[in-house]
Length: 507
Image (cartoon, rainbow, N blue to C red; front, side, top):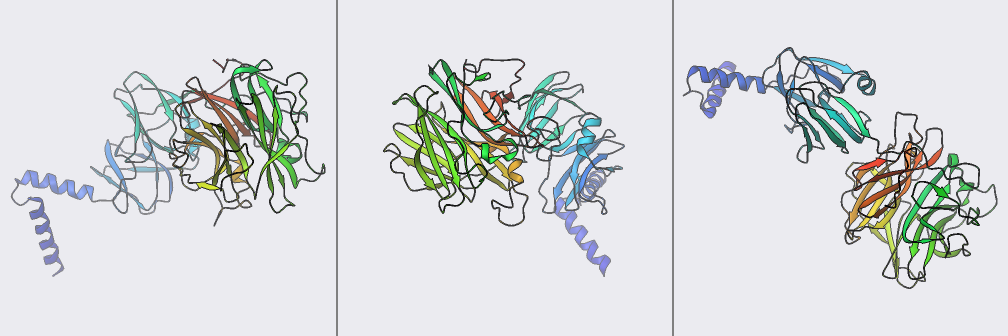
């Protein structure tokens, strides 16, 4: 009876495909193809992980999830191999079964250091291939294509045979279509090779929280002005606003007569519940003065954060501090002065981006409004931000954000480590209500001994003369801090500055 049922089903299937009325040769070809494509070539005992797949004869494969959705683009496996991630939930299908072999890779970084990059799928989020710009030479006889992002929203770069292409890796998933392994050479690094030399009042150059402006008309002979705070090994007692000036944006001075910090530590010297932080500098063209905002935090108070302001006509002599507004937590405030309106963005205790504004010279402020922030990646939370009005009329927001590794709801306690390992994300908006999806633009140099190898912190940028200049905070694995500079035509094509090859960023 069982054989009869199977026979009936087979006939119905053949009728559906029109096979019964085909020549025998065509019938065999179609039946073989059906049998091959319905077979899962994934070994049942396979564990989740990275594998090099090889085949004695060229074999075209697809990888799907259990619902039949393609995990990556179809690809061809040869004796030279193809590397990808596999797990028991995925299904491998092929034009012919061949003799597939699976070699598990325990350490992908070590594999890439040992030899050239095999055709396959890699992830920037796992540090398999870093987010960076690469020169890739195609020594094969066919075109090489680098796909980025998920299926359905792929971007791609194609390199013709014998040519060298410049590929900017800036997405999470990268799929390489090639006949042979490729040599990836960094065209340039997105990160600075060295820290800026900015001596602090505490005998180090370990600054964070930069805020930089570029003036059309110099003040005290300087076009660039910066506010920042020292923070060596998270020492909150030294987190007091410092001022620097420059004419090229790379070499910085402490102008004669200026005494840093412009506001010493509040409270008692050893009381770390009361400290300064989070500088932001703007230029007021109506009053022709620099305005330095910063945050004083007092954990003993019910309303813990007070946004302070000091002003200066010459960048050297600064006014007494003024209290601007008190916020329950409110950190990393960014300010834009536009048509007489002070616009302020900040992060609250739940990692929300909040917005308020004042049209009466900061006497009163509007009600707080939360701005929805959507990230390209999952489980990303906002921490420190900068906002600027761009040359194209948009509001640009650069956020140092972290990926949560904690179970349950993210809070200020269980994300403390993750907030030392952040990357920079960028989005923009014409109306300050709906921002574009935030995408990663700069990451720490994880896996190196560089000065910014652990994480990135509060950073800022300048958009002027059709150029983006990013001043970013970096954290070293030993707790050291510092500021680096990356420059590009936009946020997604940044190049790190080497200070041994100085340039003039004002041009």
